[in-house]
Amino acid sequence: MCIIIPLTHIDLNDDALRQLLCHFHNINVVTSKGIPVELRLENLKPRSKEIFTLLLSEKKINPFVLDLFQFHGEHTSSGHFKYVRFNNKSANPTYEDAINPIHIQQFDEVWNHIKLIYSDKKYTCLCPNWLFSNHLTSSIALNYFSTACKEVYLSVDITKSQINGIILSIDDV
Image (tube, rainbow, N blue to C red; front, side, top):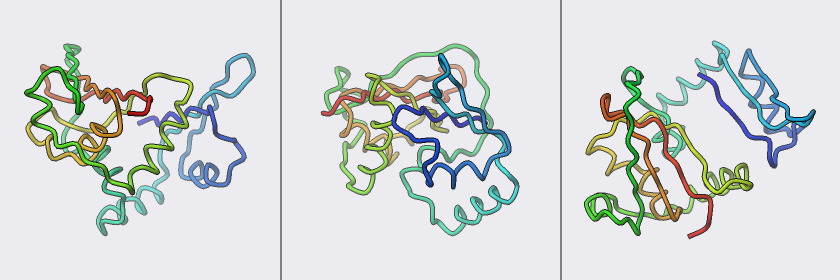
């Protein structure tokens, strides 16, 4: 797994960033014309994985983050995709009725951070570990994004029923 962090508004000498970097074996800085544009983090260190697993078992992970990245199953791709639009102004009433838009103040900090990182873009794409199923209606993150974003799209591998990406508009509602 590779974690990509755009460096749009992040200082490479930031203490919080340094605290994150120490958990990975492979850290690569991608540059464009000599300017750092993104970080790529790979190979989580074994001790860091143990700590994360412990936090997970003690339910000390933010439920928003957990909802985005927890998955039990195997990821494979058929290459056959469709896009499904979700939001509180959806043109397709079937999906609009299925999602309960909610606003959770504690998630605003996470969303504001994501928006800051991608502020030079119109959309951002997150890669949650979700299956395309009726269980999505209870997703805290999807319900939150349907309130916080003007547009929310899911990239769905229709053969495997897996979500390959969630595309979020950065513009404020």
